[in-house]
Amino acid sequence: MLAAAPALSADESIRPTRVEVDLGRLRGNLAAIQAHVGGAKVMAVVKANAYGHGLVPVAQALVVAGADSLGVALLEEALILRQSGVTAPILVFGGIAETQIPLFIRHDLTLTAPSLDKLKLIDDAAAAMGVRARVHLKIDTGMERLGIHFYSAEALLEASLRAQHVQVEGIYSHFANADAADLSHARLQLERFQEVLRFYERRSLPTPQRHIANSGGILQLPESHLDLVRPGIMLYGVYPSSECARSVVVQPALTWKSHVAYFKVVQAGFPVGYGSTWVSDHPVRVVTVPVGYGDGYFRALSNKAQVLIGGKRHGLAGRVCMDQIMVNLEWGTAYYRDEVVLLGQQGGDQIRADDVAEWAGTIPYEVLTNINARVPRVYHDS
Ligand SMILES: *Cc1c(COP(=O)(O)O)cnc(C)c1O
Image (cartoon, rainbow, N blue to C red; front, side, top):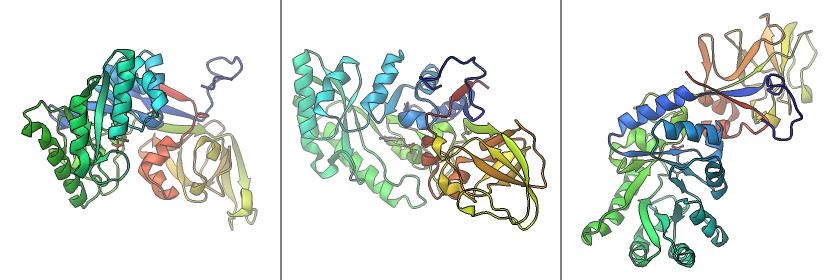
């Protein structure tokens, strides 16, 4: 709900355009992942507003359902969770600014140490506060994003043994292509990671929690599950790519819907929408639906996407506007306030995040995370 909205009743304050999240589906997906990874722990990844599903309600539901920990990208996301009373361990994946370190420590958040410099800053800050900071070391095994290169990693592992105010609870890496049909690069990354981990064996030291598997790794590389897995997209019931194996059955938890706001007959030759890009050569029925790119419904879906009305698929007519779309019913019927499903199930048909991604020329991750704050989230349980 919008924080600045004036006083409206519960009914009035919810737009017909809304996201409905099925918490039962999320729990089911978590359970399916837990069953698939055997004894490995599960860190539920809830960054980017829980992939558009709503950070706090989703994190709370997953922790209650047995997620061992949470993963986010930013300190800000972790702080919102703490302020909402979430006490589960939270790992922040992203890079850290020196000034943020005391905040991490004060809120008992787990830091990612991707370099010798950052490790030292964390150790110094924790020493000044008289506590030990929880840390996961980050090893770059073939993505060139964040982390010490696997071929230089020994120095970081050594330094972490000497750092007196750091508790190294984990060590991790991240796959670049674990959702691809060709797993050769992912296998190479896993081998490099295993080689780094032999450091602990050589020194007869206990190994911190080892983790590398995102959804692609969970689905396609059982040998990558190690001590802990980090599912994101598959928790939400969406597969990371079309070529990725579907070795765990998960169900989409999100429905994005709106309603018919206006109905009309458009005569032949009368163009629809900005730019007049859509014209019919025969009379058609067209409805207007109050959702647009201002909500995160991509403008790239113009003249391409389909929506469900009355259990049937209908195509967009013309460009997506900021706040509205027009849908061509041909000779189908629809009435004011009939449900329109942009993403999700209606009747016997379903529009998947993959479908929307294909129409918009992107990936399902971006479809979900792009649904913005103007769209209220409503939760129910199945
Ligand atoms: C986003 C992210 C994940 C989850 O990836 P999915 O492909 O959504 O499963 C796991 N680990 C890290 C470090 C991430 O940034």
